[in-house]
Length: 354
Image (cartoon, rainbow, N blue to C red; front, top):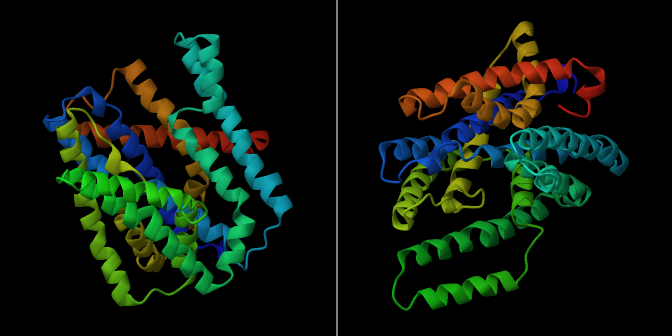
């Protein structure tokens, strides 16, 4: 993308979301190793809950870029460039993670399975390929504002509001209500809404928020919902975990109502806040360079978290969690950026691996 055509707040947001993903995985790395009643768990939960918006925002950024009507995008280009890059990146990095597992004692069968399934964070590449495959269909929807709003309404109702409400009622465990809640849930499943649900919702939402001017009063509502969503995530995760006696990640789901409360507001904050930042030529080159490294950082950072523990004995339990989490996050992020930058200097790898 030419410098004059760049949507700078999307670059800023991509960089911030990448750091948030690293922070999320660092905070979560030892969460299951501590008691849910412990101080460490409270810290992990508080930090983890604060960045659970990262993946939805990543998807929204992609939607804002790929669904722009002014951006020509043929099916051939979509498959030979965008999807091919995801497939080759998955194959290369999944091989790295599978090989690491084999060197740590995994059997050949386990190694092959690990290669096909990908490491725990690589589900994102499977998901994003599926989204890219339906981009031509979604562009037909987003070509019309009313159709876009109808799509988002269906997604909001059937992916977030109704399931979230039923989930909350089920959590209350009220007498005589459980069976009714279960029956309503089954009825919603039988309606079999798929296209407007899940990640396509976030994909289209990202385009909508970027393409249209949201009235100031609604932006204020979205901003006010960010702390509400955060507190809901912290409190509900703590409650469910204490009740279960182990970590319960129900409210960490990207399709939890509480996560939806945070994501659009943060996107709009970037659009209307970060877009006001004026940078010089040198700073812009740094932003472009860091933004170009974000995919590589996403791919390599879990390996670096593992190596910190394996080689350095460094985990979030090594010392005070409020200090260890940011220290490890900064270390992993800096090294990951360096690796992504170096790989990006290699012509044969630049287009297909990072």
